[in-house]
Image (cartoon, rainbow, N blue to C red):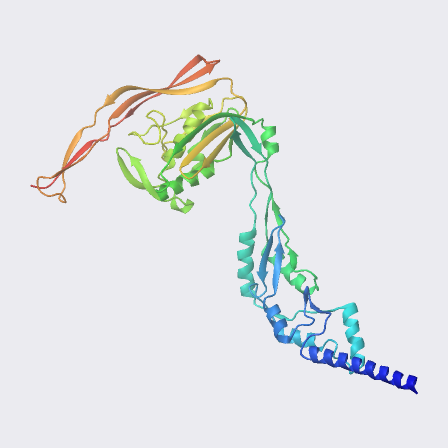
Length: 436
């Protein structure tokens, strides 16, 4: 009797435990999704309706780029609007399609096999196109040319790097395919098209460009925004230009007319003895800096024109003005090999360098003032000044300057070349007087 009573108590305890367990399970999951239910990589199991809804509203994909970068983007930003009610309705029914106790076998299958829900969504084509257009433009990686630079006085080549572009149609297809494929990861590897750089180490090696032949730097005022913009734009166009042996190089042929359609802005330009606004103001500093780099590189100057008046960024006799199409800077390569012209702008400096075969000589450029032309004095009436009051603006003298280039070997001059004799008009002294 005692044994039978004891067994009965054990059975009742087990029954109570199982009942308590089942009741607790029912109580916990009555408003929750059963474990094992997924929407792609998102596990919805054990989530309440509100919790799952919050998760789906934040559904984010991670776009993988070839360089390993991950760029998060939300589905709703892509124009993919999940039908959350429909998805969660299906998720909630998983494991509840059969009555007790058979539903527990259904739930066991969920844990063993997982239930992958198909996403239900509406697609806003205009929003997706706008988003993809912005993403493809922003995430594209332009190629980087090989760069030859100077380190400790020696030419050093930095290898090129390929870039890539993204096509909206291909990105759209891969994203929608990822959504419908039951992916277990939020990462989408984006399809890209490679873009090869134009200048490579191989090209530099084939052309035997390995030495610095000449380099020259001028400074500009970065606060003069329009002029600085024009300098940077023209320098970028002249960067990485080759001149083959015996070939003539024309700045006007490369840069062309400095029109607003090409992105040039109005800035002060020297016209005769005056500064006037004109598109492409600042281009003369570009041609002047290149001119001096070419001189130091031993290149032949075919055409060069001085300014009518002295300029602040280089000594008299070392300037080179251009005015499309009448005045040009033309350079001839007589080095026996190909040369490469590079241009670099920093915050306030513009630098041109010429690379090629090693030069046979050390080259210097000298200027000698042959004559100083004193500034004339001009008196003008200024109605803004009180009667009897004067305002003085000091002028600047003009010069006649001879420029020479010397070729040295072991410190000894073996050749001297007279490059030019230039005349620069003075800036007049102006006395402004109040009207009597």
